[in-house]
Amino acid sequence: MTTAIFEKLQKTFPEAGIELVNNPSPSGQHSLLVPAAQARKVAEFLRDDPEFRLDYASNVSGVDNPPKKLKETVTRKEVVEGVEKEVKETVEREVPGYLEAVYHLYSISKKHGPVVLRMRTGDRDKDVALPSLTPVWKSADFQEREVFDLFGIRFAGHPDLRRLLMWDEFVDHPMRKDYVAPDDCDYEPTPHGEILARVQARGAAAGEVA
Amino acid sequence: MSQMLCSEPSAAACGRTLDVSLGPQHPSTHGVFRMNVTLEGETVVKLQPVFGYLHRNHEKIAEGNSWLAAMPYTDRLDYICPLTNNWAYALAVEKLTGIEVAERAEYLRVIVGELTRLQNHVAFLGFVMGDMGAWGSALMYAFREREKILDLFESLTGARMMCNYMRFGGCRCDLPPGWLETCKAFVESVPAFLDEMDALLTGNEILLARLQGVAPLSADRAINGGLSGPVLRASGVDYDIRKVDSYGIYNRFKFRVPRGTVGDCYDRFMLRFLEARESVEILKQAIAGLPGGPIINPKAKNRGLRPPVGEAYGRIEGPKGELGFYLISDGTDRPARLRIRPPSLINLTLLEELCVGTKIADVMVILGSIDIVLGEVDR
Image (cartoon, rainbow over all chains, first blue to last red; front, side, top):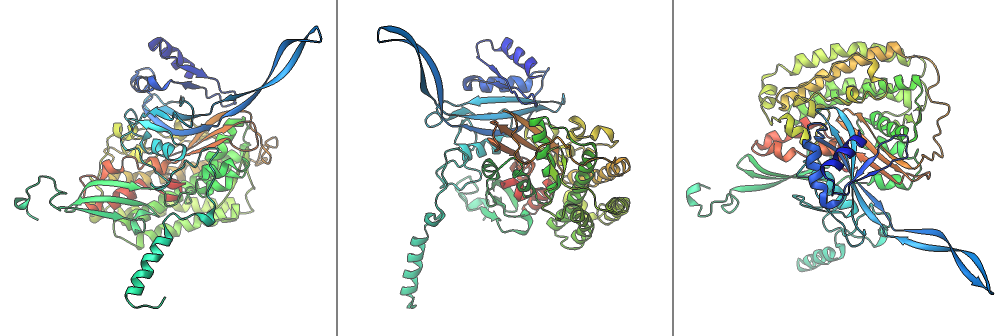
């Protein structure tokens, strides 16, 4: 199913650079990696195409892929004491982290699915914008807000991109792998000290003994 | 204030609109859920749901625990229906690892799953009556039946609500002596109860006035809005995951998929009645066909499970809609990502669309007819 869609997408959008991501799991749910710039167009095509009619965006998930250090063994030739030798060397290479938004699509009219659509951001610390697919599937509305809230992907074109589960003043994105929860002792969601001072001042003005 | 006195055309500028914060502590919001409603007179002109009061971030907790340790947490999502939550998670892990499920366990899953659906729909009937102001009687009738199902759960799993019953490849424990007979006798008594509820409620003039024609929803909007389960089918969409995916052994049972026509509150209400009756049919067939044998696949590993690298999305037809788990394994003994697809949250996507233009008193009924549990909405 996904392969057939991939082939059709390749024909329809030859320039888009859509990739098929292999899933080695027994589930066999392979996914389509769509570049952010083309995602809206591809999503509209998938929704309206009479052959596939993926009219139902069931699930939107965020996935965090933190930066990784890859160790690679490199062989190079070096002249040691006048003799040419092959020297093996381990080189560490840093792969930048990225965030993913994963959409599980189904067709209610054709009763097939899931088709997995993925989009990837650039470096997860700087470049976290992706196009919103809420105008294509309304069901992505709250789910994209949740992904924004917990992962920090900014969905461009979302009608109302606010935090969904955490409160508005919260600054971090708790589902990221490197998130450190604040120490409960230091943590105050409302500035308790200020309020206490205000209450005591009011009490003192009314002549109460603290 | 009369229109004549207003120099500004907007209602807000004239002070003719009123902002009401419904919840988080409000008897009809089914938990800690808030709706910021803007009213013009009694008519809703804007509605903003506010989430997160019960947010515990199960998804993050799961990343720090073993694959099996996420199972008891699923009980606490939709705490009305713990066993279907167990099932959805077990199904997703089985997809991810390719574990086969023991034959007897498949039947046990269907039996407890349909009992869960039955008690959810029965409790729904009581709750929605409470939302309409008929507080007490209908709910007590409903809870009397629900209690019998919870007793069955307790004698089987040891807990009324936090069952933690399913395992990868099967179930945790076998039926205690006499359980099946008690269950069979109960299932046979359910149609009489449903008839009683039907006679008590559905012909009632007040109920009809409160439900019929309130917040109709077209099939196209329901599909685009991601609605699932009874709410989707009430809009006339023929989509039941038990039929479409035929996960487990649902292809062995004969049952019908009820559908509504206009998708108003009355259709959503009646659909639960009809689905409960179909659940009874499935239960009768499953109890009659229950085979012997082990309750868990002896090859299935639960403790110290390390699924192969990859990902899987597994879903079931929960009582409230499509409950799915999206799992990513990096080959270790902990999930790299565990995402819960919560039907209760996604069914609220169109809440504002449904409520705008109705009266404030209808908002409670509309919310009640969607059937949410906040443990699942906020996770």
